[in-house]
Image 1 (cartoon, rainbow, N blue to C red):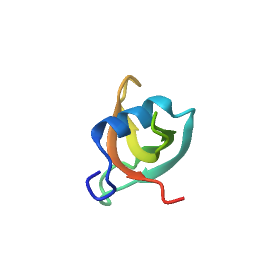
Image 2: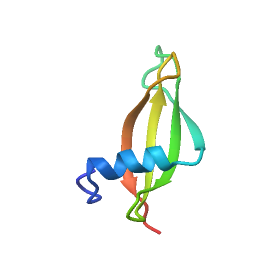
Image 3: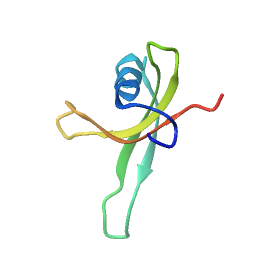
Image 4: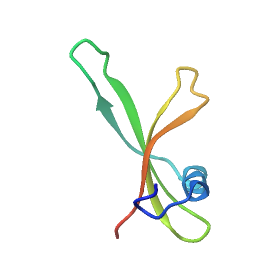
Length: 74
């Protein structure tokens, strides 16, 4: 977040304002680990800043765990 001049509040706003899941990716760290699904969310803050986030949803489907976020370049 620091490199993209984002504050934590901007990231939260973008996640809450994301209209839908923009996509999914599969992440696998080693050969023995099970592949994990990561979700991509694109949202806009109340200030009009477009933010892309990547995260995972817990087993119960209740919590979105943020992995990374960045400000869109366009």
